[in-house]
Amino acid sequence: MLLYKIFFTMNFFQNIQSFLLIIILLFSFVNCQNIPNPRSQQTSSLIGNRLYFFSGDLSTTDSHNDSASNVTNEVWYLDLSSSFNTATPPWRKDVGMPIGYNLGASCVSPIDNSVFLVGGRMYIPNTANINLGSSPVYVFNSNISLWTTPNIIGFNSSFKMRNQIQPVIDNYGKIYTFGGTNYTGFNASYVDYNDMNILDTTSMTWSTLAIYTNAPPTFVSYTATLLPTGIIVYIGGYKDTLTRSIQTFNTKNYNWSTKVAGGDNIGTRVSHSAVLTQNGEIIIYGGSIWNDTTKPATPYIAKLDTSSWMWSIPNLSQINSPQLCDHSATLYGDYMIIAFGQIPSKSSMSYASLSNNLYILDVKSYILVTSFNPNQTLPPNKSTTNQTPSPDNNLNNYLIIGIGVAVGIVLLGGFSVVGFLLYKKQNQYPKFIPTPGTTDRI
Image 1 (cartoon, one colour):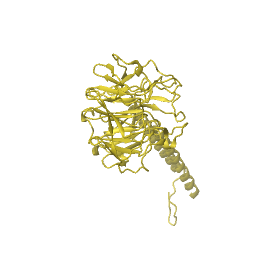
Image 2: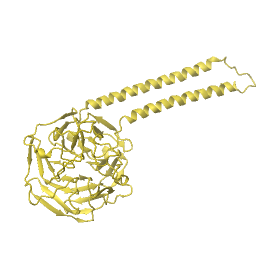
Image 3: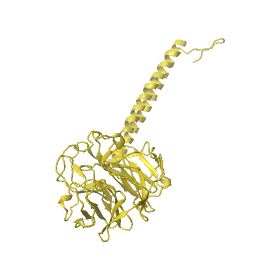
């Protein structure tokens, strides 16, 4: 009887272990379906409570973008209406773009919340073929997950494939895009530009301003930040070695001017990010030095007071801060959400180390937090919080529900099998009736 009990116990636990292993594998499969691959050179936009990420380059072996076969057309987003941990962000996938896309930028219309993707390198999805015949602008309606290409009046054909740019959009729906390059990484000739292009999204008319004598030189991979005063502030980029010299453009009178910022010493940088806080400070983050993309810019974080034009370095541990370039950064209330990008210190001239991590910086305390709580930050625009679920999102929800039902069936079936085996084992032998003096029990 003792041998039987040992044999039965061993088989019982073996069945339980096998069953639990199946469940673990099933849940691992479910979780892996909604995690985007590491990437860089994507663009992001905040629409209400949804933070969208468009496209990007997935390649780690092509640091110079000489091939576009790994440029994706994926669209991912995070729902910021609920709390989550940065280790397991609640990623959701939306309908993909009609083209592969990188090194461009997106603007959200203040009129109807449409996303305008301007410029960038565009490719036929899943191929290395450049999409020269594509539109220079794609429009995304997040309410119905629909991509369209608008008919633009007076478009400047030299802007086609313009990349490494940062457009901004004003309250009247006008998009301002300066400079850029048409370099595509295919060993073809290219031109760097210093013209200002304006797209009026209300009438879909395009205009290119004459190049003024005081316009900045050609430069790319900069950041552009629009202040409430209508001034666009350009920081960094491939233009010169003096980051203290900041170019500004007045959208009201179309005049350029130069600001020489004081304060802390801020090094040169490209492929960094910039956000504007509610108190008028521009926070720049990450990037690499202008003549070596494998070396991180220093300091890694800095802020510019646009009322005094003074630089300062926040008291944030440079050791614990993630080193990123070609990443995304978006301000949501008091949270600066940093995502994806390339890790300069782990990259070389022939290899790019990519990230799919999410970091959240509290811009009031300058502390990296691991939990996102929407109740601790104020949404920038409560009027745009209502979102209609997209078809792809519904599909994802149905898939998750379906897999959940399948897991439930497997759980129920597994417990039924284990229960049946237990019942069968217990009834396979005659009942043992204890008598006085015995110590065995079942």
